[in-house]
Each structure stands twice: as structure tokens, then as C-alpha cells.
Length: 342
Image 1 (cartoon, one colour):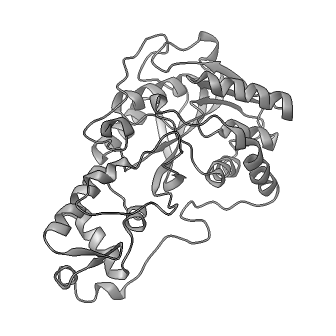
Image 2 (cartoon, rainbow, N blue to C red):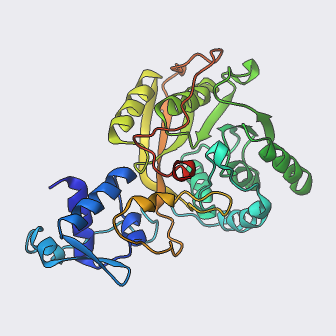
Image 3 (cartoon, rainbow, N blue to C red):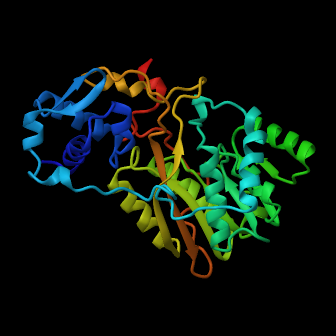
């Protein structure tokens, strides 16, 4: 039995679940998860009753007899993030929720989406925990999540620079600067283009949620690393829903080649809604052999958070003055792109 099939059966052995609740527990490539569910359903190991997935007698016998008696889960307090926050971070979260209410809505042409407000502040709290927040100069390559706003609300960073292709974001940040007294800098930038020379080697901390094609990952990470000073620090997210373990291995090798040491990988640190009204990333359910019903609000799409430190001077894989060709869709690993289902 494949590992992904075993995980599905073991989750259903604990209790019957809706498709969305089961998907929330998935640790594998989304396209493989959908195929595995169809296989198990076709082989009669799982069934659907009243909108719930459950094991059949045949499915239950596929597991070790005592298996359902053992239980384990991530920490409920920190949700597996390893970080809890308090003090003025409570104020930051409250204000952040107010500030981002009028943010630009995601557009499919930019592959946009944004993580939950609490997870944005949790990333800032983790930065604070590691001493990567106060008096630091930040470069954000892409900022759909408006991490820049959460950083600004702490008043701790020395400088916050946002590079993003979406001019709407620049206008929005400019309005927030006027209304709240922030000093967030914005520059419209396409990661396929060479970096502005004045940004190279100028920042302490880089953060991004990169595009997950291989060329996209290489571009986003190389651009961010190019902006770091000696011994700089980086944070970025990577999913298992749309990035295979083969791709993870390539990313880990890339980081090593760039003179970077991975200090942390925190699984499922950031959760994302998938239906924003303007963009719906859940159309892939048409590939299933059974009905799922509407998502009741489960944020099943999660990215794991990488933190790395440069050992001395970073060595970007792509030279900052070089243009890069980027593939925006990986048809083998990405099944959430809405235009695949027109």
C-alpha cells in the first residue's frame, strides 16, 4: 500500500470525515491525494455516506488490528507552529485585521492568494523570537500577505521594502502610509527582470511566498538572497500540496549551493483560504469520483515555513543582473489553477 493511501485510511480509522476535513490532514501532493482517494473508493476501501468519507469493512481490515487505538496529533496550543505570541503582538493582530480589510482582491493572472491574519502575525512573532525583527532592514519579494503591514505595526524594523508586480498593492500601501504613518517602501518589480542595483546586498532579512514552479522558486529565492547582506536571514514558504518531495530536494540543494544553512522547517505554518470571490482555487474537485459538497471554511491549503541563515556572503544561484525565464504553471504538480477548468 502506498504511504498516501495508508495516511488516508488511518485518518478515517479515527473517525469519518468530510472531504475537506480529510484534505486538511493531507501531507502529500494534491494531485496524488485526489488520485489516491479515487483508487481507494474504486477498490471499495472507502465509501461516502451523507457527505462523509468512511472506511468500509474491507478498508478497516487493510490496517493493523490495533491501529485505531493509538492517537497522536500536533500541539493544539501552537497548532504545530512552535511559536505562541502575546504582549503587544495581540495589539498588532487586532490592528492588522482592521488595516487589511480593504486590501486588493486576488487576481488569477498573478496567482495571488493570502494567508490568514493570525499566521502573518505568527511569522512576525517567530522573527522576533530569533532576533530578526528589531532594527532590521527587510526586503519582501512579493507581498500578497501584507506581511509589510504587520511588520510596520510593530514599529521595530528599521526599513521595510516591498517588491511586487501588482501596482494595486503599491497604491494600497501608499494610502496606508498616509493614514497610519507607516514608511513602507514599494517598487513595482517582476522577478524575471534584473534586480535594481541599489537593492543588492542591502538588507538583513528576506521573506517571500514564492511561485512553486521550479523556475519560479529559483527566481524568487535568488532575487531575495541577492538582496541580503553578509550573514543575512531568509524566510519563505513551500507547500507539499503543489511541490513534490523531488522539488523539495532541489530547493534544499539550491539553498546549500547559495551558501545558506536551513535552521528551521516548520510544517504547515501558514494556512490559506482558497476561494476569494474573485478567484476560486478549489475547482479541482471535479477530478474526484464522488461529490464533496461545499467547503465549510476549512483552510486546508498550507505552506511550511523555511528559515535560513547565510554563512558569510550569500551566493545567489542566478546573478542579480541577469533576466530569468519563468514558468508560471507546473501542469504535473499544480491542479488548483482555476483556468485549467474553463
